[in-house]
Length: 575
DNA sequence: GCCGTTTTCGGCCCGACTGTTTTCAGTCG
Image (cartoon, rainbow, N blue to C red; front, side, top):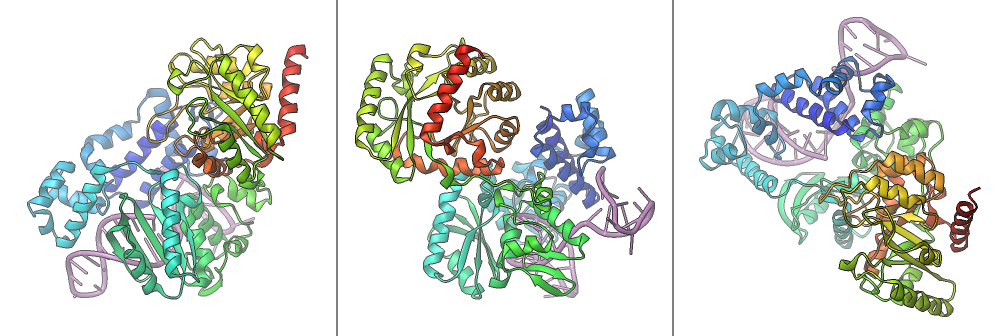
């Protein structure tokens, strides 16, 4: 897929045009095209073949022409020209907070600043502060931003951001117990990573709220402190923004600050067509505010049904809402069990009993114990003998726990030659078999996974791409082939809920479901504390527009076993 | 550069905060 490459080029073109002080709307058009390409599910090459690029809103003649040029020649001449006009270091400077195109160009022209090192120099020697429009305070802010930029350039994972955001809400609630306080932004949309933390509070005590916020114990720096908005940096280095709105604007503000940007722009366009104006304070007809207290009424004023936050990415959800066709998204309470967890038989930290008790406490009906197989020696993988011991223990436990079933399972390694780490004779004795790749990532992973899918004793392919967010990319596999085969055989593909994995991603999970694949949302827990990670998997599943009908572990224990037996029977009689 | 249920030209989402100004530009979300 060349989607991301071209997206990156358009984004860089926008940066360069911005430095050249070109037309802001042209710049925005490139930014929009870049964003569309980044979010696009289909391969841009396929769309070009079917001549359907020009049908994408935001892609006009010039953008399609440039995509065409890149796909046929490997470069875009206009981009090459632009690149030659501006040095690379200058474009990178735009990523520093408080430093926009105007300041970068000014520093470049007057002080020959070409990169981050030059910038550090002119901050230190005081020359930056001497430029027109600059002063001590501005330079001090830029200095802090440079330090932050050099320290961390990555987005935070949802797994890091959500608990902190929840803690901030808790601390604010201690002081403002009667006010409504919510997490907004990309965390509310359950995006896998986030740039900052957005909190919203409905209150008439603006000043008191902002004052308390910037004084929270975890705050290390105050970036901004106004009448209705506060912005701080906290211990971990993350930025947290707080907005205070009047209660009768709370719905409009929630809508506005939840985003995404693309979704909001779409809504504003709709509002305009209806001669309405929509902002964080409400929906307005001329000067008159017609609503704003709840999100529902904001959407309703535009002729839309309320759209779940996880869907708000302008990927067709507005159209579906308009047509009354929004999917009934899966919820945490629809999950009946976790089919992929570990015990202390391999590298888990707790006994099977401990894990099962916690799962029962979470309201589940069953738990699939799937420890590593013998090839995973680094994870203390079980051999045949220990697996049989484990099966006996599970049988005994099942006798003692009422209203709950522990499934006898395995996470069997897919070996470099595509065979599995246990024979079919062993696998057929189990209730659930999860197969996954843990080694030799580069040795034809697609073929190995396809072979595992063909095995009727394999129920689920776990963490299929092997990606670790912010750490490593997934293996190079052909998901189209894998989804096609999995849809044929009825093999489930996992949506691993660990916040560092979320594998499948939202895009890929949606693609899989669209192709008829059943998804299994599991936590891969190695300790009881990880079992609640299911909420992250659910967030991603909702971003993938999944309903409970798409998900294996929304089925009862009996149905899962029946389904397994039926698949094995079908395969064996080959009918 | 994109787009069209008043348009093929003339719009393009909208507001807060800061720091520098002395009424506003720059930046951000």
